[in-house]
Image (cartoon, rainbow, N blue to C red; front, top):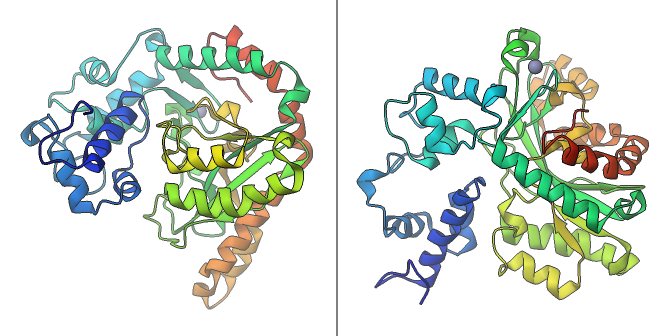
Length: 380
Ligand SMILES: [Zn+2]
């Protein structure tokens, strides 16, 4: 009987708790709804499973909260923690969530999940405009370790030419034809770049979520997997969706066409649906069954992914297509899903194969730099 298993519990409920506690321990994003769906539990069953956790409800300040930033943490406290995460003097300190809260002098005691939700990640900060970075010690160690192993496995640029870097792109649409990619958890504006109003982004009017892969001489189509374009949707992919809409419908034909030795699929380690959190899950089973050669990315390392690092500065740009639409009297027409998809495809087409190829060929040097810079982010 697995530890943490309780009388009257079901294995699924115990696994929900185990999964969440694992993700938290690794500092990975926790999407409860997606985890409940994965184990076929309704929302109320899922929360009931969590309530059976050894931690009594009253000690969990997040309990019962439904959305948005936890009200337990004031804006000023978030700002103080943010300042610490940007401060080079903390780069060599092994901070965990409670250490960060303590350093920032938080008055109310918050649990890890609450802090994680408010701050996004503890691992690193990277300014989307000037490229300034701050990478905390524990994350630097993880990155150095990843870089060494990756260099051992794939020392030559020819090795990297077989890799197809894959993951989800979350497009967001603002007014006046503005588009952006939703920044990663550690991607922000530094305190200097934040002062410049033109760097800001008022709000998302619509969002569109797609899976994509690129590599040397290779670029997939965008695979739109979420039918909702609501500005509230996070576009977190479910594992069954990943297996069906991506692995089965897109990757399988690649295997059939070129054989399993022709490429290695690199998957984003931070996305639960890809199956990095455990050895036994639907996605891993699919990969085993079809002999897919794959590896997980380092995680929380936008410098090591072409899907993060080849976009315009600030991950923002203007779509001429949507700008034209905006001028229409019938503005609503500009927001049809098909038009949004067209704008996303246009942006994807703008990422030139030549730049991708150059980026891929620089991979061994890039990893070498990660090692030499003690795990810090490689500027680009
Ligand atoms: Zn900056």
